Image 1 (cartoon, rainbow, N blue to C red):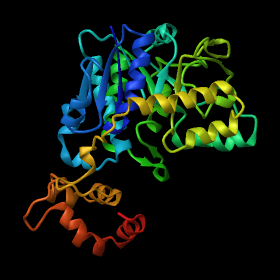
Image 2 (spheres, helix red, strand yellow):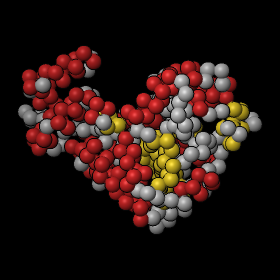
Image 3 (spheres, rainbow, N blue to C red):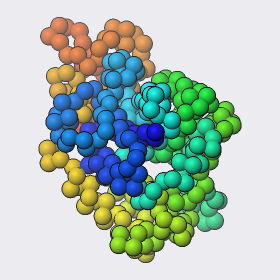
Length: 357
């Protein structure tokens, strides 16, 4: 049986719903799980309708998510990616799972994926590169090739893993790297879970590189692929049915910006963007569901500088093993950050003041 999952915090509920309905439409045989990048969240569970997803997993259902200190050190994006490998291992080890797919929450499936499944079954794991051919213009080199060098050759919005020895070895290696080094820190050569898999073709020779352009169509490759069609006739990619489209960077406006630069006159691309904006809006709940890991226990938002400093200093981790907890006692991490932190790390806290936190 094939299982698939996505990983996202509660704020992406509308996107998760769009992904789920597209997957169930075109691949109804696949069991779909939502890995929520949060501790158990009753507000989210109350919002979900019966059978809306086959299973909901929370970060604290995983062993890594039992560690409050570890959770605290990750931003919302870092956590959503850091928990993926352990969840993948857990799902692939189930008796009824012989192949596992991961899809980012901002992906939508537009046709059956039988050919993709066949390719994954022929090896141990499968990844999609950001680019399938060299860029020919300087803008493309600067925008796409250099970006891939910084962020990773392969896009981890999609991953397929076969239940075999090498597939499990890959997940074990990837989990260990993400446990310690899932950071959005380009200056250190890290980009969450993604940059690590540049090693995958070297370390895991059974890996398959998916070169079919109908998979993982996105702003970074739209200038290299011929997207056409409509919702009535179906969308095509280089003469084939569009497999899945990645609406990455949608909320920030970056998606529209890149499409405007490289495919401004492509009616199909603009039709997809307009549809996705409406559909995810319709599927988003009226009331905001809070990210519980975004605040201290008293509701004070956790500044990025607090996470960074706590990650840097082992002494803080030892002194405050539950960094989220705010107590009436004199010492808690929030109090330390308010009183001692600015004196010891003025370079970080001046940045916090500038951001208005």
